Image (cartoon, rainbow, N blue to C red; front, side):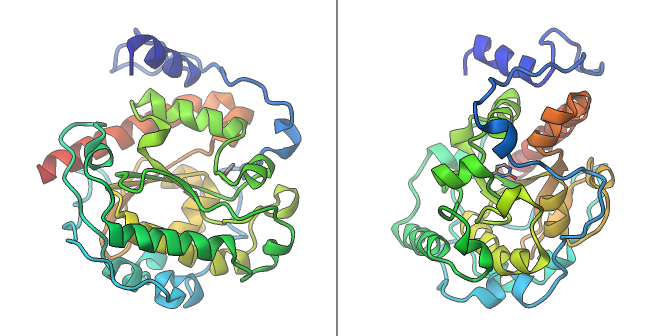
Length: 321
Ligand code: URA
């Protein structure tokens, strides 16, 4: 990415390029273009501190691929579990721990990344054909899913998008109106900010995989209900098993609480490297971009989270070299 674009993305994150790294960022600014139908239809991200009324409790259904079936074993090597960040707290995830089968069915490892946010394996070798088959089968299942009532109100399922060799997996809450229309996550105004957030740490959208906890839009962008999360989470677990990301970034309270099976407010989940699933995939939590659009003052905290995620990724990548 050239310097001018990078500076532009940094400005969108409210970061002045000449700031010293040891100083807090300057006042955030929003530079996301307005979108005609965005205000009413963009997903309203839950308040980060709101109670976790929609958090799915660990259950066989929410335990991911253990109950989802349909995914045959995937050839390839299992990457050794990543160790937690030095100086960061590792918090085991009960729900993730129950996703044993999802994690046990390992996907292809891929070449280790060699630089901080280098394209890594994403730009390298293609997805092995047999893994591609599993991705395609999973996508077809998601698009025809009728496991919860949301299928009757959605326009289409939103499977997720991105590089199937990505080392970063970004996980949001659920599709909004624009996503429902276009069949792709994070394409509304919040999506523009998410792109800017990722670009600010040197990650083009095309280099990550982006998915949601729910694959169908809840009517009127209401919060996901626990039974909907329980029905849908197995799909995400299978995506994780196929992708085997080096780092997961949960954006927003709903995604974070459901993945970590906790009621803890988002503020307490930030700033740590959580451990997800049997592969101990590092998981970092930050604010949802839709929340940041409403609360730009918190962009500077999100920027701290992103820098933390970037340095964590860098450390993990260097450990595997
Ligand atoms: N908000 C989300 O959490 N996911 C999307 O795909 C869009 C908005």
